[in-house]
Amino acid sequence: MDDYALVLNAGSSSLKFCVFQRLSEKDWQVASRGQIEGIGTAPRLSAKDARGVVLAGNSLDATVSDGHAAIDALASWLRSKWHGAHVLGIGHRVVHGGMRYGQPVLVTRQILSHLYEVVPLAPLHQPYNLAAIDAVFERMPDVPQIACFDTGFHSGHSQVADLIPLPRNICKSGLQRYGFHGLSYEYIASVLPEVAPEIAKGRVIVAHLGSGASLCALNDGKSVDSTLGFTALDGLCMGTRPGALDPGVVLYLFQSLELTAKEVETMLYKQSGLLGISGISNDMRDLLGRSEPEAQLAVDYFVYRAAKEIGALTAVLGGIDGLVFTAGIGENSPEIRRRICEASSWLGVDLDPQANVSGVSRISTAQSKVSAWVVPTNEELMIARHTWSLLGLMQPVS
Ligand code: AMP
Image (cartoon, rainbow, N blue to C red; front, side, top):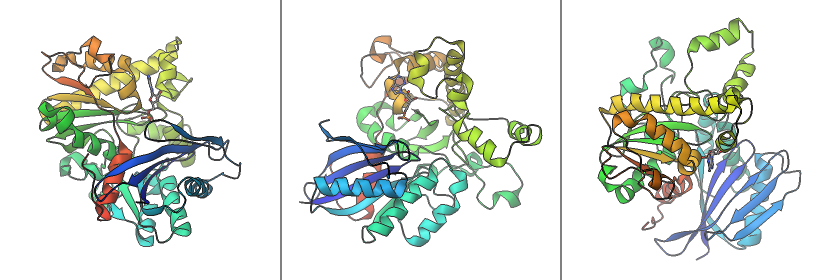
């Protein structure tokens, strides 16, 4: 079969992609995973196959300066590799579904225009996610496109969990907590019955710790609360975002420092968090390797906030059975996992130091009252599953 499905995750300077090849009615396999990075500066295409064999690793023409040009570059590379391939559908990561959209949807021009309305709620991601959909509409109008939302998995929260306590007439236009990283949490919830069957039906806190970071409280695999809210600024300290702030700070920036809305937006989305505290880097790996007190303070704050919010979500759940780490930091940093687990020992988390550095899934001792786990996330596969499902294509067995 020469049928393929594509998953795209378009950001401000990168276009990540995953190519799935259909092997039979119900089996798909990853044909390639890669990205175009440095869009607008020094564009470069890299791609590997499922076994890690390099398929591409080359600079691109400097004209690849925006999302539309990146789609063109990707399409021409795909054509050169899989000549005559039939693309059955394209699944997109879209950060914010707003009030209208929770579950994945087949995108129409009208839906796209609704999604553009919520750009101010996710200025770091949404415009780029939508530009990729727009570019595909222009170039391949017959290929069905599915938008999968990071907010969707949280749409079953109770009213009280999602409430923003401002005047009612202000809130009715959609001012509520939404929650993000939903595709990651949905994937984790889908694999827990296999990876960690003893906690899958219980009360679990999943820590998605990457450049963006949040926690999700799961009860029986369903999201009941999350640390991200109306926008992706709330909750934990992130690479360049501060996490929860006293709203009076924002008033101070406007009223006393007389910053413009654009300046405040840039500060909140791009200059704060680990980067703001350290003045050195937004990258956890860099900070862990540095001895400057500012770098150490940034890491201390990251751990402090995560432990504090784990306590808060434990209260929401009425106790916890398991703690799961995922995403770049959660999957790859034994040190951050150790520090968060130690700060959560009062809950009954007893880390097994050897397991924590061994690359195994369960990293708590056998006696630990609350078990701790490392589970790699796979947002692309989650998007692909939704895409197959919405297009009526058979899902793979695993
Ligand atoms: P993500 O956004 O999920 O790709 O995660 C990116 C974050 O993961 C960055 O802050 C990286 O520094 C961090 N990261 C990746 N590998 C490691 C590692 N081995 N140790 C510490 N942090 C890491």
